[in-house]
Length: 304
Image 1: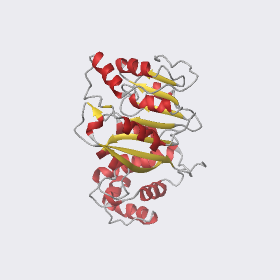
Image 2: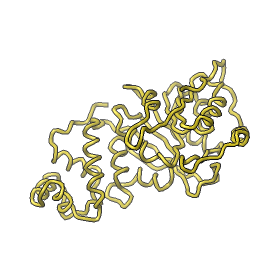
Image 3: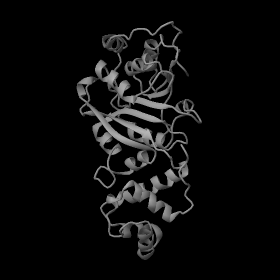
Image 4: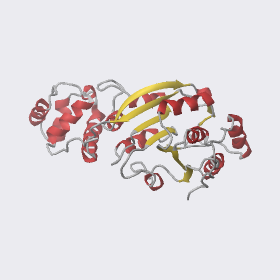
């Protein structure tokens, strides 16, 4: 089900003030769901900064997951992008669609961004082009930020860039350096597709209701060349399985994986890894090298 699109206008309309969004929320008698991670961004300066930092331009195809009231959506639409917003809550979808009425290239689509824990929802997938550039900009609901970014990174056509507001803890994991304490399965999954960096911090006061944690903007630029999807899957799965025992040494953990430690040591040395290294100290490049050693037919990176 697709909410009403914006109507054509001769010039860009003015953005409504944040107070109108707050009034719409109050008028609807809406109570945000902690389970769904509903913390609505209502800070003009932060919304403008997110759009500016994202670097999207007029005509760019942009996907926003979890628009909520449409506050960030309006700022994106005002920049002239072709905007598709995926919202799971029908009441919020209606409110956001009303605020986006003046923008002909913006639409709110009612649907779940996820189909369970391990797949993107059909409504979201329908908005992702099979080829060509697109971008993701969003204040992601806390409850789905990790899973959805891992799945987006593993899509056959990941976005050219992403700029998302997430919990600070998640931001640290997304942008962690290989081998650090924060570098884990989520780091590997996302960094296989994107070069990640942490951006500006956002205080709880920028949201309604006020969350208990600080948020942070993170940016990702699509890697070029990009590994084929199947290679990304195999590297991700290898790292995710072994990182469950991150404090143990590689020869022991890989030995359990391949059947014996002697074979494991041979594979590790061929991959340029010290068999006595702890699993948690392996970098992104190390995981790729090990996956290629275990499966030499892994595809080469795709041309940009």
